[in-house]
Length: 353
Ligand code: NAD
Ligand code: IPM
Ligand code: MN
Image (cartoon, rainbow, N blue to C red; front, side, top):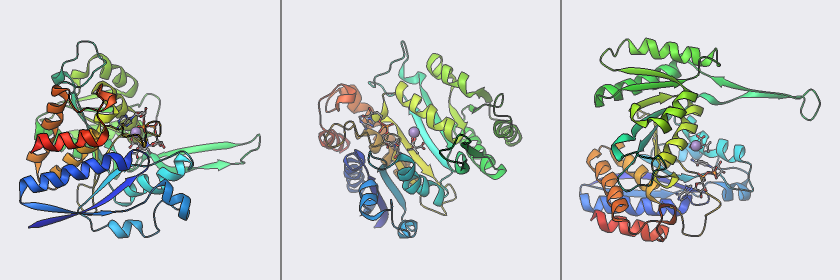
């Protein structure tokens, strides 16, 4: 029987709590399917590890998990370790080190999910964000000159390479073509006269290879407004790293909240393992209390199954989440229920079976 090796990095705060449920679901899926199984290896990397060792993961961390079939990650970051140290040292190191240049984030309002938009129906919010995930505003480049003097100067560089823009835009076009959907590029060329003018230019160039795909271009400020006022206009969306980060939290807010927002960090060429993680963080405000909603992590585990070649399991997982939402039982407090994280996961598995 096919065995998949999954590297599990539960991380910090609610990370371990939600990942426990995602692993539970993956094991249940393997049992129900009968055609494959999972071998999970857990890595205790994160902020506690940092406080003990001075690093977020071992120096050969990437080497240790390079040959996994996929990575399942909870969340990184916790008070006590500066965020830029913890995130640069683990999450961003994994995304960059494994060249996971596509961050795929579905923004889909399921039946039964709470939505703050007046009149929005489930079919009205069904987008797929393709976020550039390897460079842009997240390049980590810059300088900090003359610290703590009146001359102090800070420069944070955005790095937009032709290869980096082209590959993620092409990925989005391929997806739009395959799914027969429109593609919207979100940028900000009116103010960012180098990076975003370049992005728009490449979007136009790549688009010439896809005359069959209907395209739209929006400035990011207007895009944020339309996501609230007229979300129907978005299907596949491609955007830069930082804009994608911000807009997908907005996407989470209009499609049920952080507890329902899933994401995949993909290396499409499969030279390196891809990584699956909910888009929420470690939620220190609710950590350790059994309050965290595991459905985002479970949805991300569904993306992992799709990546391994089981799209029918992805669909079944999303359908089961929707079933839980419409039944209004065994939901966590963020969705108006009073179930614990593990009770929600158990109910999910029972429903799936
Ligand atoms: P957050 O996503 O952790 O929390 C924002 C709000 O959403 C909080 O009120 C939280 O309780 C709620 N929330 C998040 N996930 C939830 C869930 N599954 N169920 C119920 N409620 C949930 O964002 P933050 O507070 O800005 O960041 C906390 C820490 O996490 C910081 O260190 C940040 O850098 C880090 N972070 C990590 C990731 C990641 O690892 N991918 C993502 C975002 C933030
Ligand atoms: C996310 C997170 C990360 C990001 C942070 C924690 C570095 O917010 O995955 O959305 O900005 O990419
Ligand atoms: Mn984010």
